[in-house]
Figure: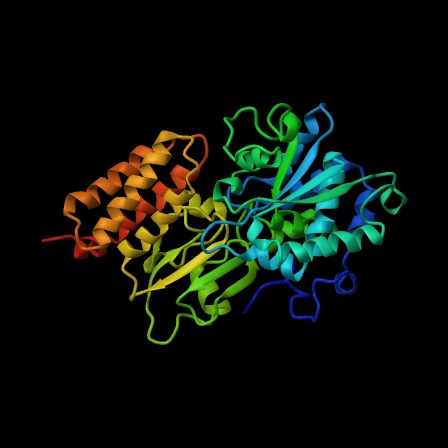
Length: 419
């Protein structure tokens, strides 16, 4: 049994990415409705919807836009974070490939709601010839149809939408690192406050809403069905709507699945992915991308929403769910993850620059069979020292899995150390 398909209903249709297909499924019906509303009315609907940011932090979208509307400095900007670089995460890429008009219409509605006239979509350079080519085509189609540009649908509202490419730096997935990159500078995350939504903290020092691709794609859905109805789609309080889960690992049917917010990891595995592969037994679950704390098989009944997982000392993160079977040695899996974090640290903060490098070297030593028991303890202690001491969350994102892998699968590490 599967839930409603609010964002993926067109994915099975031929040429689902075209304007014609999007319109045939009800696309661009929400936009004229939005343009007849007051901007604050749209924000109020988003608040009612309990939509949480789908990029990783899970911050309430309506609250973010409320902060922005209180700012009196103009111009204001909307920046779409399409820099999807978390290992295991590929749902935004699929959304841009299969139904980019959801993002285009959602970004137009969002821009109108915050009184913004210029929108930037920041995407990693690896997607230039694939996902972003589809998005650019959708933007061009929308402009030709009168949904972008001057005096949209005769409403008097103007909006321009631009695509900008990064160079594949994971650190630019951090919203302030992305803003620095957009301004033509090195993608170093900024100190906060001021926050991007405030004057002085956003793009070109102006108030800026930074939203994930999937977050904005939900705007047409919310306006068409109403914020209250959208909120009731979620299975747990304060987590409205569906979520796109990028599922990989030792499952029969990996892929991107749309399921109600708060579905359990067990239900996601069995009802959507067909269960584990033949001969595989579930051993661990990475619940929200590489930077989330790992779960054991006994924790598969946990709900996948932001609040439940935060209370359990992990996170829903980017919606990337990796199911691992008994063939995986967790020390080797962690070493693989840590090489990524060490490579992608921007080097601005010493605890992150030095800590991720030390973690990677120690784990490589353990995996090579040259480690000692003290090396495992050192990995844990170094990870603890890295937490909450840096400008952005990359160090915490490396420390969380490092600690949890050792806490829950210590035997895998001890198996590899000498003696």
